Length: 222
Image 1 (cartoon, rainbow, N blue to C red):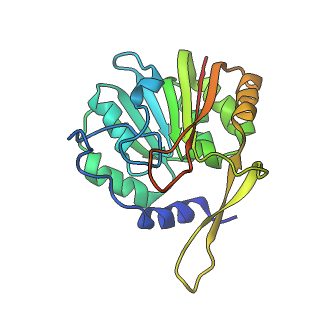
Image 2 (tube, helix red, strand yellow):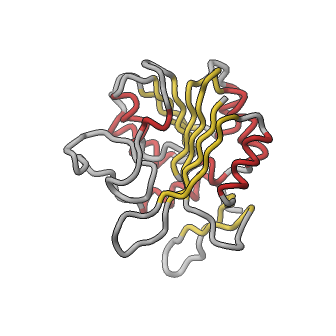
């Protein structure tokens, strides 16, 4: 497999910057899906006022910045220096936001303060073995905490560990990383196995338009 940091640095070069404002004129907002101005927001995390929240695979930091703007103590973790550089350039002066370069499992093992919520938006929860990640997150969630993640729904018949390709130049082979694809019911079974409660998993339909792939959103509590 490709070195993880190299893969996500390459991915970062291909991704556009988050818009300066959304359709409602807001300068920060939370988005679970691959579509602009679509789907639920930060309410899925059920955070208490001033709660501590972890973004696993924070990328360029927009979602974590929104939570900090709401008064949360937001920690964003990513392995990509390029992603974090972009996040710090735009959001680095925001109070309540901490952006760290770290590998997810190691960070969860070393940060002992705990979190009121942990989330992943097309991030670590999609690209880490759930047998390692789910118990590590559960160990760090405070009582009543929430774990929520979103990713693309699986292609029918293509379940479990899959190869995910990140394109490079026309004369270069793509980079390859692993991802984990499961149906909603299987995610529910896995989360229950590792001690989560109040588990919900559903595919949110795409908004009207030419694209039809929805978004899998999984929620679980402690």
